[in-house]
Amino acid sequence: MISRRTFAQTSIAAGLVSAPAWGAARPVLVELFTSQGCSSCPPADEVLAKLSARPDVVAVAFHVDYWDHLGWKDPFASPAFTRRQRDYRAAFGNRSVYTPQMVFNGTVEFPGQSQSDAARAVDAAARSGFDRPALSLQRTNGEVIIEIGAGSAGPSTAVFGAVYGMAKTTRVSRGENAGRTLDAINIAKSVDVLGRYGGEPMRISWRPNVTEAAGLAVWLQPEGLGAVSAAAQLRLSETV
Image (cartoon, rainbow, N blue to C red; front, side, top):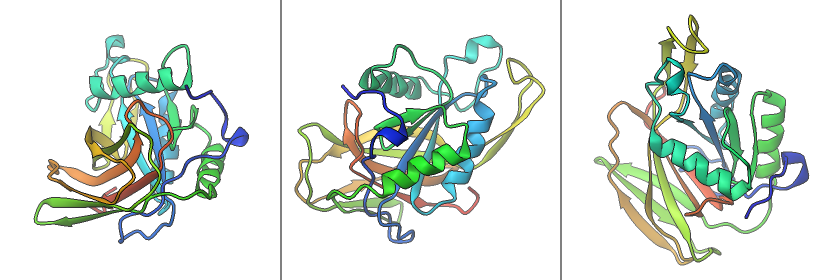
């Protein structure tokens, strides 16, 4: 079980090599669990938008569905993303799920409404110095080739792949954010396990559905969640 710790109390397991177009040596996976039905979430959405512009950050917004009962159904929410957050609840030993929740490389979590706190968490992750497998993405004719180098790996290390959509602006008419116009960025459309990594070099061919997609994110992490050992992304659109 991962103990709940703040970014100031621990170093973060950062990713190593991004897709060649980005060149960041150790990109950090930043996940935001958010909802358009949550009045506390817009500040964290704004923070994620700023972080997503950094070449050393792979940012993905997972919209959860448990706020939908309050009168506004988040058009980007998915039960799969709620399940992922619940897996994090178990991994961190939290009593319950909450929004907004920002997770840095699977090991540090907090609400993520402070730009300075989030930036310090990313910087702490990037300074983590242990060996990690190289990870790169290349896209040709609709196929994405994922190359992973040799490195240490636990028995249940999975290769996760997510497709994220373009920036969207939504006028919310009901619920806690009624009357507000909300912006969202790097909106997760799907997240899947693409394979298992055992420490040996490997190559995966992936054919994601990129309809209205802005980018792809790939990372190595225990299937039950925990520390991310590498992360990379491939932008498909400059819209985000």
